[in-house]
Picture 1 (cartoon, rainbow, N blue to C red):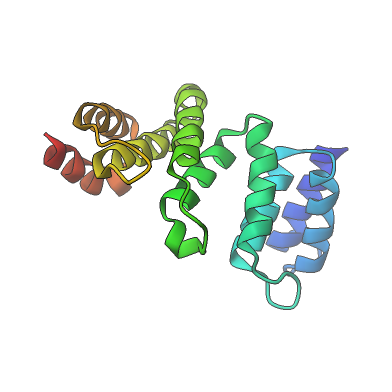
Picture 2: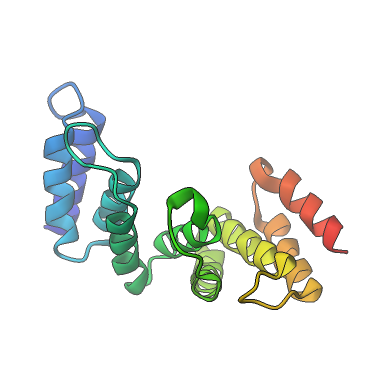
Length: 173
């Protein structure tokens, strides 16, 4: 049932049902899916709250983070990497810095995503590399860890972020 509800939400959002996007219906069905702890429903609600939907959902980073947290706790590596990204770029999202939590979720995502989603694994490894290279006040700087994770990111990544990751990787050497 939760998968069917998620699919209905997706089809309303894309306009596949009704001929045009119906975000109110999409949110309604994503909510039904999320209430049953369905990670795809939780992820889509997180995305919608992160961006906001005019006239339907007011932008709320805290609600987005709550839905991501539920999906991450269920082992969803997409949610884990999204939490890590939001905590690494905390200023952009209006969050407080929490580098240890960013490391935790990036590490989990790196581990679980490596088998099934090289892009998500590469992003998680890239975040880990940047965190250890920067050596933020809550983490110690480690060129060894930074080069390890940035090397994994380059190995598993896509061309979209190879340039920046390779630059940071070479800079760390």
